[in-house]
Image (cartoon, rainbow, N blue to C red):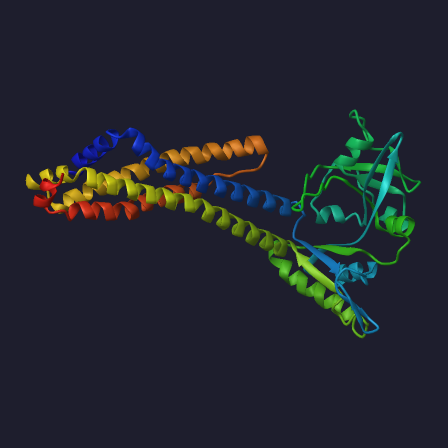
Length: 406
């Protein structure tokens, strides 16, 4: 029997019970739609995280205070800092794979401008901080080395600060704000970066010369962290090793035993985020696949019922010359038609659901060709796997027993 005839018979058979066929396909439709929607959400989250990590800057290395030991008592990482401004200078002078390096002094404070006020984070850094973060200015200029040496009270502000302290579209450049009752002149406004991977607003920031923040706002001699940038992406690991060597050499014989700092790279952060998002995507897809399996069981159940209902028809076909493989192929094609049709409708429903999620919830979604192929391929596999047994049962019927069946 020609395949075209088998396909026509299969479609005619399914059309005789349209509602039952649709309800059978519904499990596959829901399963495929769930797989595509869940993978789209997972891929969208991964793309967003990668973009936010890229927003950290170019080839960034972050040096944080590590565990600190003094007098035999060991404190937790970050509880005390033994990093200094001289460490940043040593890194810049002794690490050929490092392009920029800056100490970071960080504090929080209420900021006032006229009758407006806003609580924010103030960063003290060298001008190179903006190069490390790959953070251009939207307006104005950045402070220079003279401001750093003279601890000048100048700053650049993020877009969130500009919007809240200078509403109505007025220019912030040249204005004066007060931080802890000290007047700071705004030299520039940073371009907007949006939220980071932790959901924090990166534009809610004020950056001033390191010496100004450290001496006039914090009254400290230590730094919160060091930031550096490798000369190129392939040099990040080499830069890490050089920084580790320089800082360890500077701490030989100290109570910190050379382990009072931690170096994290942009690659480390990206790898961790990638692994997390992959785990999330696999988890979501696995849950969605359960719906496909349930849909496959529904196909198998209905096909078994169909074999029972059409036993006499099978007997007649075999009595007039149909072979067992023709009957097997006929019922297998019926199962495949249901799963293929359910797969196509499921792909459309999944794409529509992804768009709906993105529109109503504001979540980023990305429907990839892989997710469509996976959902559709899974539905085809479900049709073959769960359709084989009923088809085999139909093909194994003996013509004389089938004709006698009531």
